[in-house]
Image (cartoon, rainbow, N blue to C red):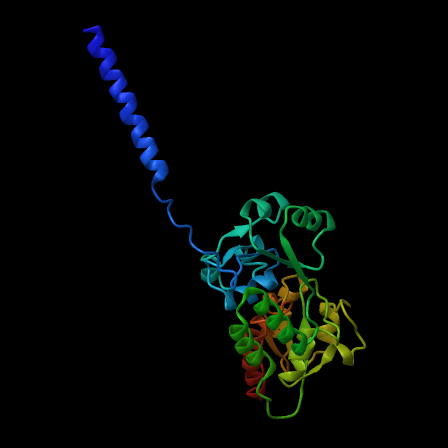
Length: 281
C-alpha cells in the first residue's frame, strides 16, 4: 500500500511537471503594439487640459490636472472632465502613471521636472498665450506632440478666424476677481477689442491688475460692466439699481485666463453681451 502511494505521488509530480513544460512551450499572449504615433499623455495644467480634451480621446490621456474637476478653476465642462482621470500633480503620481509625455506650465517647479526627467519621462512646458495668434500656435504645438495634427489645425483655424462685429466700439470695463482689471497686452483684452468693445480700463489710465473700487465705478460708470468676480463691491445692490445707463453683465472667470477652445466660448459670451448692450435704450 505504501508502494502504491509513492507511485501515485510520482505520477502526480510527473504530470505536473509535464503541464509546466507544455505551458512553457505554449506561445505567449501577444502584446499589443505600442501606438507610437499617439503617445499617452498626462497634463498638469488646466489650460492645457482644455486643449487636450478637444484633440485627443480619453484612452490617450492618462490624466488631467485636478483643477479640471473643480468648477471654480476648470476651463472645461464638468461632464467632459468626468470622462478623464485626474492627478494631484506630485512627481510620484506622475511617474507611477508612466505616460509617454507630460504637459505642464512653464512654472512647473524645477525639482518636480527634474524628478520626472530622471524617471525617463518627456516633459514639455507651455506659457500662457497673450494673443489669439499665440494661442492658435500653442494649439498646433500641443496637437503635434499628441500626434493629432489635423485636429489641431482645425481647432487653430477656428481660433484664428473670428467674425468681425459691426458697429462702433462700446466702452466696457472687465471687472475681474479681486476688483482688478486686465492689462491691454493680454488675451482677454484682445478678445474684448475683437468683439467691438473699447477698454474702459485704458480710458481710466489703469494697467494690469490695477484695482477699481465700487465707488469709482458708480462715480464714472462705463457703458458696459462685465462682472467676473464676487467681492463685496461686485455683489453690491447698487450695481443692479444705480447704473441706469450701464449694461451690467456677468462674465465667467474661467473665460479670462486660458486660450485654446476657451477663446471660442469667450467670443460667444462677448457677442451675447454686445447684442444685449445694443438693445439698451
